[in-house]
Length: 358
Ligand SMILES: NC(=O)c1ccc[n+]([C@@H]2O[C@H](COP(=O)([O-])OP(=O)(O)OC[C@H]3O[C@@H](n4cnc5c(N)ncnc54)[C@H](O)[C@@H]3O)[C@@H](O)[C@H]2O)c1
Image 1 (tube, helix red, strand yellow):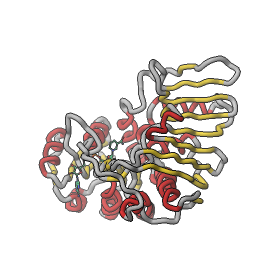
Image 2 (cartoon, protein in one colour):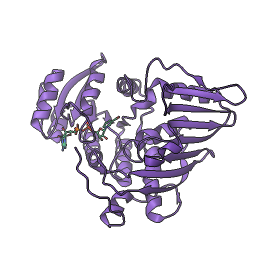
Image 3 (cartoon, protein in one colour):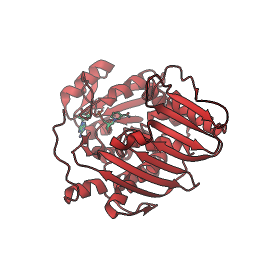
Image 4 (cartoon, protein in one colour):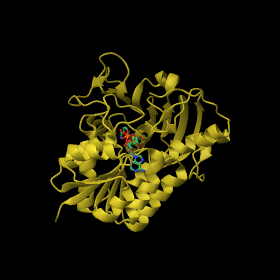
């Protein structure tokens, strides 16, 4: 079998200080494909030609475009990585799927609205294109080992998953996706939430609240709970799992605490779990995520980064914003199309003070 022809949409520009105005994620995707013997980096597209040229030079790519549709038309790509900001994900995924690529690996969050997230997933399903999202933390040792502890019954029956990090939309696409992973991809049945949004916080062009409290229940009775912003200290760690026989924490906040620890009720104090020096964010997670999506394409199986799993997390996130808009509990499936947070801002019901983003 020949090599998979890989192309990139949205190369980004490498910065000294990456942040909410640009991480140039495509570079990390390209590093990962470059390590795989069955992938060939063929072409890239960015509306800023200088960005595309710098990226191409770094990775020895000769085919450079400022119009991604032209790239899709001319290059007969097998795999496309989409690394633009969220409002562009759905139209670009749909264009790539219709151009005949076999697999699309798109950056998170899925899309700017719930309707767009559903449409991109449906179109790829209809065309038989493997659509995945870069929820790479699933491949990190602290997260894998926590899942193994849950699976072996280290804390008995899982009752509750708590999240105390980030925000609902941007980083929440990781933390809620992980919560679903820990609960074996069980769909949620309802969500209730409140947020505070007094200071504008645009991350990759999208509104993100300053503080959130959300509670949801999964169909297997397990609860999910998220407290962020100034309320994140309620949880005091990235993820906590409360079971009938103990507690597991990932990323507890405090000095000299291990990245993963477990406390078994009636069996003494916290036990630190060795994660080989890996943290909450890496290293190596994107390499493993991309190795998995390429292996899944080769083997004709579904990657756990698939759109179906991403939709499960995205539904909880948009349902939380919908709960704020409705001032009540939202029973799933979610029937809206838009992004309720954007709607609340546009209608002046939320008035975040504009802030200079650097
Ligand atoms: N997985 C993670 O942990 C993680 C971390 C950071 C960012 N992200 C996500 O990655 C995505 C991209 O973020 P980034 O920081 O890499 O962005 P970036 O700003 O560094 O790069 C985006 C690039 O897209 C280009 N672009 C814009 N419109 C285009 C168009 N129509 N056609 C082609 N190119 C176009 C821009 O010129 C820019 O070069 C975002 O969705 C963000 O949320 C994910």
